[in-house]
Amino acid sequence: MIGILLNFAFVIPLLFWPEWILGLFQIPVTQLIWPRFSGLLLGILSIFYIPATIDIDRYRIFAWLAVFPSRSLGAVFFFIAVFVFGQPNGFLIGVLLDGSIGFLTLVCLIRIVRLEQDVANGRGT
Image (tube, rainbow, N blue to C red):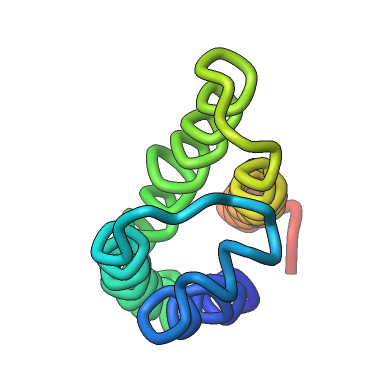
């Protein structure tokens, strides 16, 4: 749920005030349509995270897809954009957010799988 809220902290400004939000990270803007479109896509993607957040047993595959490829490829994309293609360092916020949320989600999912295996093997309660 935290990842969804963090995403929407970017969605709303990207849709309505793209120059302001990108200016905070010193990212130049020449065409406002692209940051707005990115905000729209981020919002749509975030909505797909909601079912797994509400009922992880029923929507387990969506929880895994939130980590691989969504968060992991997002972090890799921004890392490469900055360090290989010379984009502004402000894009590292994508590495920080996607990487940390993806890592924490992965840890939680691995812990859930281990707990389920322990219960199945009679070691848990």
